[in-house]
Amino acid sequence: MTNFGIVRLARWKFLSVASAALLFQAGIAMVGFAATPACTQNTHLVGQCFTMQGRLSVHANMRPYLSPIGTHRLLGIASPDGAIIMPPEIERIFASPPFDRQLVADFEVCPFTRPRPGIMQMVCIAAARNLKIRKAE
Image (cartoon, rainbow, N blue to C red):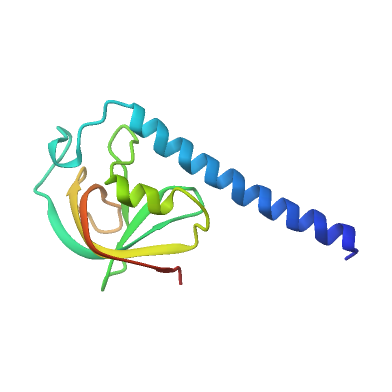
């Protein structure tokens, strides 16, 4: 590959990361403008909130997912209308690159759907304690 090709590839990678950051921030901003009720007060909840230790990360589709530690499950962070409901301090952690990080914490989550084998459960994050940021595996 020529030097010109390497420069073009590096520029493309930078632009794709920058675009991803802008899209994620725009998604967070749109959620902030919507009149979305707080996680614990949402009328779409189907059960009691619960605490779990897990890893929160942003995937390639720019959506956050929560993986409970010790399981192979993946919880989606979205309300029925698609809003991402989480505390502002967590939003700030993922609002800028790099996105290859995980937040390990004790999360209080509230379910929008019931747990079913083989189907992703949708939840919102009401709170997080004992936050640790680390590079994604």
